[in-house]
Length: 525
Image (cartoon, rainbow, N blue to C red; front, side, top):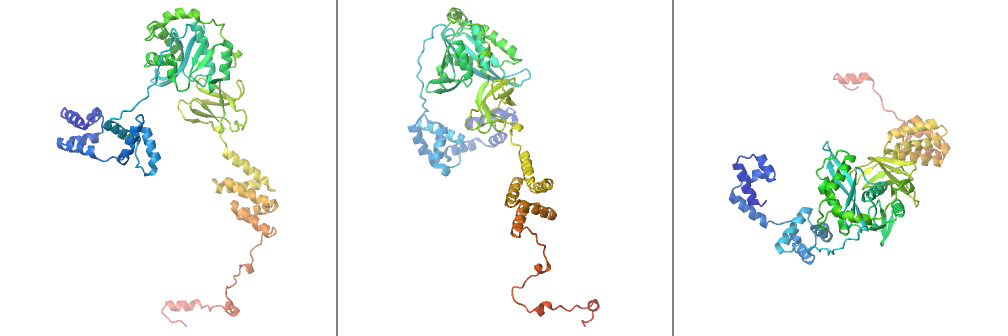
């Protein structure tokens, strides 16, 4: 809201008896700002507005440069302007926020009439494929409220016959697996009463692993299904939703017309409601493009579909769960999160493929489709998270204990040695591994002398690896003998020669009576 209008509105509400708090909420500003406007008179507001128009801005020193960029590149975004400023000026540029750059660029565009140019994509109307030739498939997701007003994350797969626009939708309250996708295909074919020659997909990880210059690399599970059913597949380019317009429209239609504002009770009822919605609305309403009801055109298209055999037994198709590769850090990526597997699962230059299985809200990671479960985690609905089982992390405490036992066994009396090492650990808990390495290095010098050093350290209570190392060094130099200090060794030799008579001289010692006499005021005798 423009400042003058804001000033007028605040004073109008105040005259009507609104409290400061009510005014603040109504106009969308803080209470302190409301107080500031109420304290100003119209002249002060006018002067204030004039001052704000001419005040300097942080990006004024770069105005000409930014203006040239915008003139040369009218489609340049404010985010790119910010990046170029950092690139060209680096630390010399004043610290500014994204919003500051965005406002500054907007003002320059308005002031110099530089509209942001967008390069429109050229579209071409494509005739509908012949009846029975093509189905388009895509996935969608939405968050809805349940009966307890809790948010639920639901996902769905949608199918649409490209000619008649007849639709089928199926929902899950968890992520889809490849097995789920294949089961939904079978359900859709049963619903349509046949299958097409070709199916168009997005490049979803459940269906394709990669695209090599146009050559599709399908997942093993989906490849087996395609081979058994015998339809052709066409994958749209990544990040190109406009190339599959029919199904994109269906996904948006399902979200907005069926799911939005609907209360979730349970998955079975939700799917039943969706089927009734398809019958009532999704397939019954006149289509905006064809101007026909999908259900009526479908009656003509159905005979053109290829007949299907009985429902496939998925055990005859390689329909193991989603495949993933174990990363170097012994984690597996799933839905933008990382899930841990036991240490050592990753093998350098070997096949690190694992199989993911979804059961309710649990993610199971298997070594083979029906093999041992390596890890089981609760699925996290957030993104960018590391979900880690403590059993999969390195037990550092256990590693230290094993290390201590290994070192203690290198002494003649392993039990006493272990007691000594525990004392060292107590003194240096944070550096115990370093302490053990120093002790191990000392033992390597001479294991027999190390036993003598251990006895001496225990007797003198020297619970330090450095002390132990020094004792070993000393014993090696002295031939394995720890010398006791003697009176002769304790004598200090004078730096300069002194008469031995002087050294042997003893000072006179007065009797106690002399000092008592002095204290009483007498003279020294």
